[in-house]
Image 1: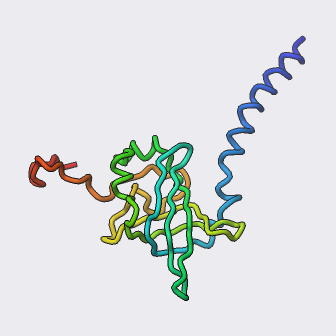
Image 2 (image 1 turned 60 degrees about the vertical axis):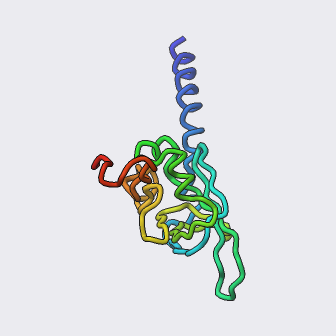
Image 3 (image 1 turned 90 degrees about the vertical axis):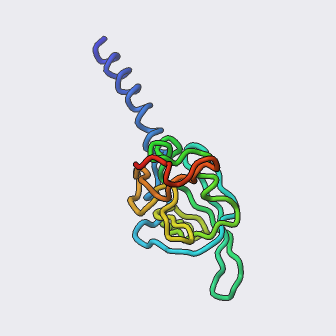
Length: 158
């Protein structure tokens, strides 16, 4: 009787552990030891679970456009904790936005990467991604835009 309860408890614990390990395969999918910094233009941004996706175009050495995509480490809940809700994030990464992005490239050699650092053309950190890596909670970045009915001096200081 005791061994059957032990087997049941062990099976239950194992069933929770395997999915958690399966989802977090960043080190297996991306080469964190060889980051690449690219300059490009945003084409699309998806603020969705489990991780937001960024699509952007980069010109290669010959001027040809190469389509890239990147996965954010922070999930939407973590982005919100750092002040990057859906509207603010989508406004900061509207199509046509010029960016500098550092990615851990795909181990498969495709134009996909895990986003390590993301800057706009002014050098401001976007979505709080400033090179902290897996599990990073977004911090700061560009201040939210001033509402049209409010002067910049009227905004609360953080």
